[in-house]
Amino acid sequence: MTRLIGVEVDCPFSPGMLRKVVHAGTQSASFVAATKDLSALAETEVSRERVERWTKRVGKERVAQMDELAARYQTLPLPKRQVSPTCQTPQVACVQMDGGRIQIRQRDASCGENDAKAKGHWRESLVGCLLRMTSEEHAEDPCPLIPKTFVDPKRMAALGREIKGFSADSEDAEEMPEDSPDDRPERPNALVKSVVATRRGIETFGRRLISAAYARGFSAAPRKAFVADGSATNWSVHREHFSHYTPILDFTHAICYVWAAAMAGRSDESGWSEYLQWAQWLWSGATDRLIAAVDRRSEELGPPNKEDETSPAAVVAKTLVYLKNQQTRMRYPEYRKAGLPITSSHIESTIKQINRRVKGTEKFWDQGAEPLLQLAADHISETNDLDRYWNRRHRRLESMRCYRTAA
Image 1 (spheres, helix red, strand yellow):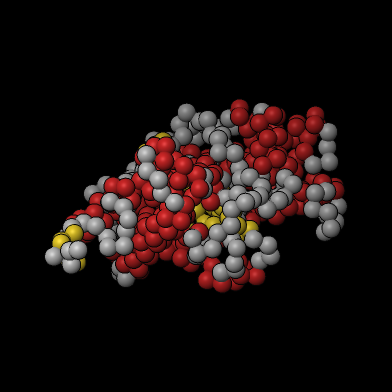
Image 2 (cartoon, helix red, strand yellow):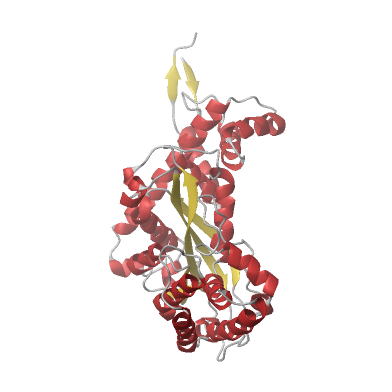
């Protein structure tokens, strides 16, 4: 009899080599590219099929662990959920979320009714960032004047072209620029980030996100913020799982709506003059004055044509509805005094990193999307979850005792 210790019966790789294969399968642009990377860097020839098979298998194991973590959290009594399971409690706990884009070959009813009925192949993935931050609290607004970056015509024109809903919409449109500006010297400092990503719908995403936040001790943080754009999906997650977090509308999205309304149907000179006033009102929390001004502009332009969503009347009307719906989440002076973040630049850059692996006009996914999203999130996370997974997996294999008849 020959005893094999620490080796999976059906695995053609050692534990160390398997880790390299999965790393390449997750980080390379495609499984084909992963085989080339392994050949060049690990001096090992691995077929595309094997890279894909074992990357997805490990990804499924990580998905199962995330589901188990979420299920354990759901069994906790409410008082237990409000304490930290770890000795490290963040000074500021920040949760940010948004949606990415991915092409799915087959409809998946498990991801939600809207997803199953959608036309074409593009579907939404859900991504969340959990940020441990530090910042100072202030008795007065530490930055009462809007930063110069938001009153730079070239910069605002670039941001305005990127915002969802005001640029030429396409299924493969880019998200907001990852360097969404917040150049305040007093802005919160992000220390450690972890990432949650899934294709399995809003309910699964919400449970995973809150359980991951709990595991990092966010519930016990003295200051907590939930930052997102105006999507109803984002705020449904806030209401169900993070209602004890301060809700903050991403300032960059808000200012782009204001910019679009100010410039709609006007010359650059007259529109920019109006925008400067509106922008300062938004920054200063004078939302009543801002909404009143946009309302007057909407009345001047008249009712929008429903068939032309790019007309000045339609753009201004859309901004007016947006500002009214989000007014309670735009108290920016209060957030700055409390040392809370007001932009969602971290989630925007995170989605771009994940999209590098899973998004593309030539990339179509089936059941393999979920494992790859999980592994992509693991690689971006700074909490060493993937290292702990590999260490536990290796210890589990070392404890196995498998026997077979020697030839």
